[in-house]
Image 1 (cartoon, rainbow, N blue to C red):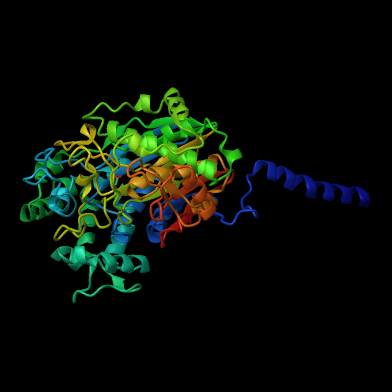
Image 2: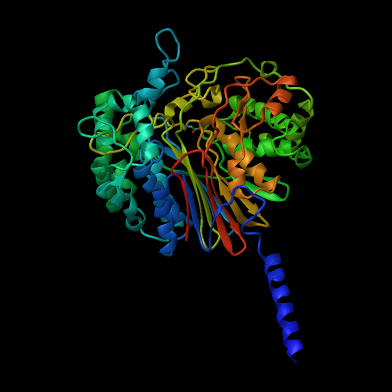
Length: 573
Ligand code: GLY
């Protein structure tokens, strides 16, 4: 009898964990150098920890992924002023698990009615870069407030007054100035100091810089947020906030009028979709170029045995670069606002077209970009855009990227309203063939027109596995966003990395023009030498993107914030 009991105990001790293991994906992998944050119910991964926590607070209060995403979006406007915003725009992808339905919300900025194609040309017909990037003419009609409120009203479960409250509290009571933001402000302070309102909002009364840990109160921003709490998006687009935006425009030569603000609408669009190795990729359609080109590149790359080549081997990186060149060449020609230009989405994401691209790639030799089109110079821009991803207990996911374009936009804050304005008009092609701040060239498809939205590289993505939301990711990084997201997806789907390891792995970037490969530190000199030997040219190494990722696993959820940018958080509940 004792023996039988002992046998049962031993057998159970063996069977139960074996059964549990077969049901559960491994939670911590001891063969991984990086492991994600794990939580039982929900997760928000964002570039600023307190904003991620604001979202997680909504999940803990019973809210869904959209409630959390909207809370994080408003909170980032307070805690991450270089990219979190009320005065910019972006894209939100929502996947509702139970309905198996994706919503793609375009809340990109819009050119004001008085904008025209030669807006940034001087008397000699050359692009005036200062005008395009640092004047009020560079500001498109902001979309963020309309986008966040639209998402909440249609797909959230909580009241606006609840999800906006953490942002209000942090603006009104003040937060400790974070070390990364203190450093970023001291580096970029000169641009902000030129405008009295910006100087007042981001520096101390005596003009000196905040140090990390100093209390930083944003009273005027709290005023704007409280008006939004009371009156919704109306407050921003028609009320006293709108009047303050227009007063700033009139004082500084900007174009945005009360009519432009009142006319702004977020647009729900059909997401672009692709398949890779059994996974379904859902991404943002134009005016984002990111979704189209991530899917286009995955279509090309699925025709190779990448796993056999090995992660970040020279042979693998060669194929990545050759694929990137061709996708970015297409971007310059075909991508723009689909309401103004017929973007050939189906043709670009067609598997047959991907096969044609593959057949043009020489596996042993780089094709010079000059054989595809004339070379142009790349100008690197500092951290700007920001991304966050959310998953809730029901498996719903949100993938949101939004931006002011440059860090701190054009550096001009709305006097009395406490927030910075975007310089997104520089994402249009100011003149065909002349590169924008990210070195990207464009043509007719992305020329400036009244009411049009500038082409973007922002690439929020949601991946479904077996029809269920599995992973949400995205990145800042201007023109490098698309390639950062591509490598994140390949690292997970192709190379089986967990999302933290996939985030940390060194990346590279090529955008067709200039004909240069940009690598991160961590790609070996031997690999670079092998690539140089087959014709690749390299620019100076740089940091590429900062992904924020969540993943649903059996029984738990995972989060990974990118260590490339300090201060991020994956906050679970
Ligand atoms: N402003 C950068 C982008 O939207 O691509």
